[in-house]
Length: 94
Image (tube, rainbow, N blue to C red; front, top):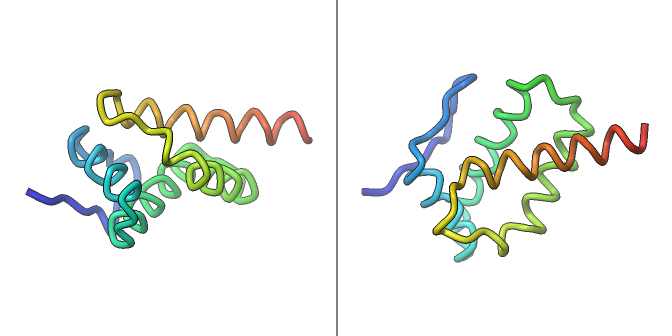
């Protein structure tokens, strides 16, 4: 069963397998899965009150690092680590 999350509400986290599916779809070049992943990650950053500039850096970092995702690992922790890294980079530059 395929899962997409085009309109994630605040604080909505897709099931682990669904998020894993989106990440794997993004790795394969599936535009729909990739767009859903970015929308979800952006909403997650906004829910955590990330400044817009920081959020944009996080999405760029997610794009650059998506090939490093290993489907055997927890997808939520992987995405959160990237969002956290973007936060640290923003704090260092400020």
